[in-house]
Length: 333
Image (cartoon, rainbow, N blue to C red; front, side, top):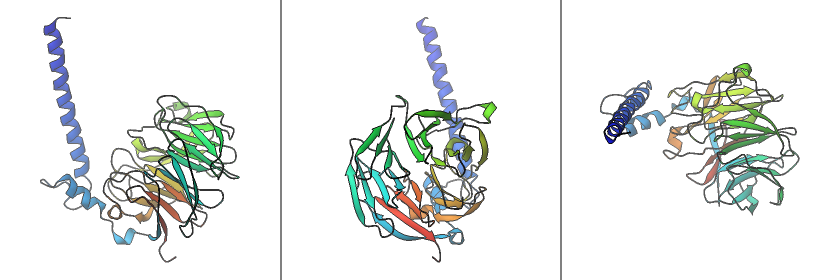
């Protein structure tokens, strides 16, 4: 190829890049400007002003109150789970800390060689710790029971959930949920685009993707690029979905939300978001019910609001920005 032709191609590529950037910027401004909040999107408003307006929650929608805040001794807290023993487990930089979930007292902990990205309770005792590309299984004292095989160089594990028969591992890097048996053997790959199984394919623009075991078998998976939660059978057939993209309080905002979710006793959902950090509750059918914690209660741009719930319906929210776990209960309790 001549230098002249090469120069033309480079110039054309640059022009295309500018056009795409302008188009993307227009789309972003349009999305933010359509939020439906007075003053949001008005010419001259700064981005921060608009986001601040969106972060303000109508007090009538807040259905929960903060019961306590558990201060952590961990650097860079990453995940939480309620153990089979009823204790709160929190992971951070090469460590796991254990707390009494009722009074917030630290009761134990152990060091690790790596930093877990997600935690789950082992039915019968113990903890699953998901590293970037593999799962490690520990007893409650921190003794390594087993180490499962790597999911490959593209793996970015972001969630793990377990029942007596299945372990579900969300891999945002490979855009799928891997179903394991408790021995660490792969049983099925779920979430890949498959019209025969009504699976639209998981869209993961950023490393946030969650999974939770469904009552009666199967798994709920967040599809953040589609702003919805999806229910799959154990063999990977999608049977239900709910959620919508919206800056309004009943929807999911930004490029890719919800980042995390948990299922309350009785089947209601708790969700958390990034961009506009907020925690909300939805009915079992996906209808918005109320706010647990609004955006004004978090530091701006906090990411990683991992969630856990206990049998009494308390909601535990990991707040990495304040290095704490916030505990919420319904108002009046």
